[in-house]
Length: 302
Image (cartoon, rainbow, N blue to C red; front, side, top):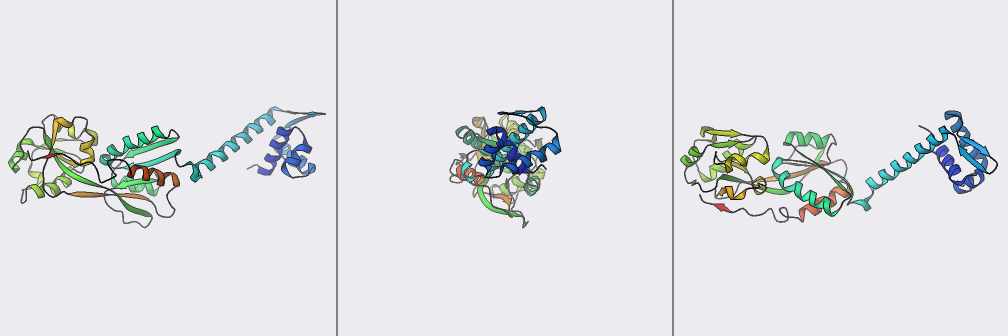
């Protein structure tokens, strides 16, 4: 790498047009400035055409000056990125489960509209991918449903995510046989979630695997589409249900005492969160649906 002291002398010489004035600006002797420029010319060839009262750049000198400008901009960008005074600008990187992501992403966009310097980078992913991405420093923040047992990760509760039994609007769900008649719309976590929740509403049931399977999708935003069309029921987190665009086409079936998952915020434990990430998290926690544990659903008994 080219000596930065030589480069500073070169830039000062171009700016002032004089070895004497450049030396005064830098607090150096004129001989030192001349020596620094000489080292650069040994490396890159002639940089200056010296005239009695003027210094003219050669093509190599112009290219080196452009390089110095690029270094200066990179230095300013680095200071801006690391400065606590710029919490409302720069990149925020977050990787989450799809359900809570459906609730978080619009809030992040609202925050970005209010603070146009923010850049939002968000990805939906299951727990294992989220843990790996945070460990690899691909994302600063992650949300997982299971608290990780890894000393390299700090984990704190972020939000609660109740599970809900969701059926087509207008149908009656009072007995296990009603679920059999509807059929199950599955998703990657569907059977595990349904097993936990349905045990509350239908104790002693023969198990989710005995229900007719009427569909499967791994796209969180599409799980309720077949439900809305009357093709079956499903069990999903409340945040996913609240994000659905056709709420009148579905209903939440009351299941008694709620089954609630805790979402854990994770980041690398070896260093603190950036000031920007801490600021964004504070904004999110003050925004619905995270201010008081989420909006309440409107369960129906079916």
